[in-house]
Each structure stands twice: as C-alpha cells, then as structure tokens.
Length: 220
Ligand code: G6P
Ligand code: MG
Image 1 (cartoon, protein in one colour):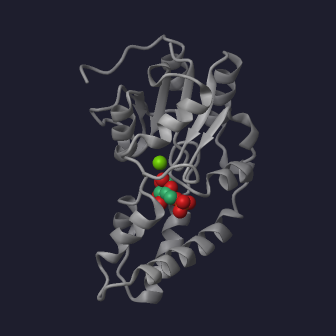
Image 2 (cartoon, helix red, strand yellow):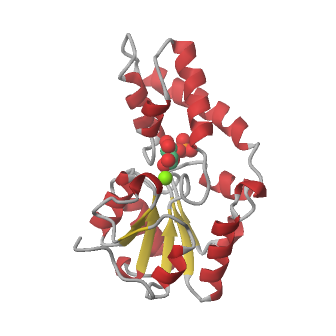
C-alpha cells in the first residue's frame, strides 16, 4: 500500500500537449524553424528552456542567451492565452473519480510537474484545492529526469519516497522516480517503460495498485 500518489500533470491529469505544440509552432514559424508533432513529442516532461534547445536544433543560426529568453517568453505568452480555453470539462470522469476514491481512502495526493504553469492549469480545470502538495517548475532547480520535483513533493507531504507512488507519462519522469527511490506507474508514452513498477492503460487502475490489490510488473 502507498500513503500518497504524486501525479505528473501534463499528459497524466490533463492534456496540454496540443497547446504546447500550437504555441511552439507559432514561435518556430515566425523564426523560420522547422517544427512538427514528432519533435513536439520529444518535449514531454522537458522544461521550457530545454524544450527550446530541442527546437533550436533545427535553426539556421545560433541564438544568444537573451534571444532564447525572449523566444521562451513569447511561447509562454501564447501558451498561457491558450490555457484560458481550459475548463472543468477538460477533467475526465476517470481522473476525477479516481482522485476522489483515493482521497476517500485516506491516500494523500500531490502534483510533481516540471511546468511553471501547473497551478494555473489546476485552477482552470477546477481541482487546485484537491491536492495535499504541489511541487512544480516554480520550486525546482533541476528538471526531470532529476528526481528533485518528486523529492520536494514527498518532503511537503512529510513522507519517505518509498511510501509514495509516482504516476508519469514521460520516460524522463519514470527515470526521475526510479532515481529518487519511488515506485512508479507508467501510462501513455511511458506505458511499458521497463523502469516503471506498474504499467497502466486506464487511470482507475491506480485504485487497485495504491490500495494494494495489484501485483507489480515483472522484475524491474
Ligand atoms: C511539462 C510538459 C512539458 C513542458 C514543461 C514546462 O513537463 O510535459 O512539455 O515543457 O512542463 O512547462 P511550462 O509550462 O513551464 O513551460
Ligand atoms: Mg507529462
């Protein structure tokens, strides 16, 4: 049994990939840099500046640190405008019901996200005050695959990593959990990641895992 579950946000609790894509795409088009959905999928779980570096691999020229800051700020402005389209309708029934079930069973729930916009997103979808701890891009200095964001979340909860389950859709997040001493459940892109303790297809599978009714994957 786990005493807490630490959820990644983007790709786990809700889906912001397409907004990230649209915002980076506008910036890239204006700079004349090639960018597509497959490059966008490499940005999953990666911090804003590290994402920009990946996009700039296709640039025709080099950019100064100040120019990079400006490009990242431009993208974030567009992205934040798009986030205003999000509402409680973006919270799936499966996610909402599972979170409630865990809370009712006395399991603590937390967010462990690299995003600096995590709190805005949680407010937009109406679940900001459901969480016992929020660790995000605002309180970390090292992005996933560094375990810092999850270690800080466990710290806020006052729990050891071994008492917490991390839920992630990115390989970088599964690595971060593993290196921080956390068990993890991989879903979406990270379903089948062999460093994950469990693989899940549907969110509600977490109830059985957390309440101790389901076995781990094979040897990890
Ligand atoms: C999450 C997303 C990434 C994003 C990162 C930073 O990890 O999966 O795609 O780059 O957050 O987001 P931010 O909102 O701070 O730009
Ligand atoms: Mg994610």
